[in-house]
Image (cartoon, rainbow, N blue to C red; front, side, top):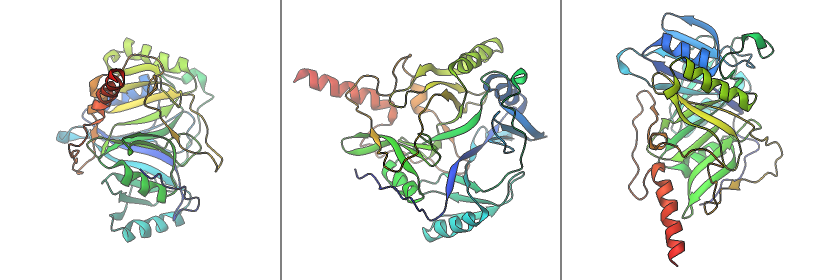
Length: 340
C-alpha cells in the first residue's frame, strides 16, 4: 500500500473543487430544496436549468441542475478549477498522453472548458474562469436554511482506490487522511485548496457520485437547515446526522434532495498549508473512527449513490464487500481480538 509522494510542481495547476452538474425530474422542487433548506442563491435560470452559488461565492455557479426528462437523476460531471487558461492546454496534453478522453465543450457562463475522464471514468469539467457575481455573505437579512457559504468537495466511490489516488497525486493532489484494510487503501481524502479535501475516493462500486458538500459558517446553520427542512415537508430528507465526524472533527448533516442526490453541509474542518504535513492514517481499532458522536448511518448511506451520465458502474471483484460491510469487518476484527 504505497502512498504517493506529493507532487509540488504538477503538469498543470488545479486549484480546487468547483461545481457539480446534476439532473432533476422536477426543477421547482429542486429550487425549493436548494434555496430554502440548503440556503444557496439562485444566480440564474432558464426553462430547463437552474444555476446556484453559495453566499461567499463570486463565481456564477457551483451547482447546475438540468431538467432530466425521462432519464431520471444523474450527474453529468463534477468540476475542477484550474489557475489560468494556459493550464487547460497543459491538462489536454496530460490526459491525451495518458490515453484518456479530453475534448473541448461549450458551457454557459464558463470560459474555455475541457471535459475529461479520469482512469475510473469519472467525468470532469476543467475551467479557469466563470462570470462574476456579487458576494452576498453579509446580506444577513436574506439568509435562508443552512445559508451555504461555498462549495467544498465531492466523494466518489471507485473500485480501485490506489489507482485513483496515484493518478490524482500526479495531478498535484495531496492526501490529508486515509483508511486502509490489510495494507490496501480503501479511502483517501485528497486536497488542492488548503483544507482537508477536494475529492474523496472510497472502495465501492463506481464511479458514482456519493455526495457533494458545502461549508456553512457554524453549527447553528446546520440545525436551522434541519428545522427548515422539517417545516417545509423535507424532514425525511435528513439522511445522516447531525453529528461529528472522526479525525477531521467536522460537524455535519447529509440530506437527500427531491431526486435522491446527496448533499452534505458541514463546518469546522482544519487547514492544510505547509509542505511537511503528513497524511493521517485512521486507526480503525479505536472508537470514533468515522463518527465521534451521533447515530450511525443508515445502510443506504453506504450503498446508494448518483450515477454519472453514460458511465458504466464497475462492481467490486468480490474479494471485499462494499463500504457497507466495513462495520461488519470491524466487528469481526473486534470479536476475533476478544476471542484471543
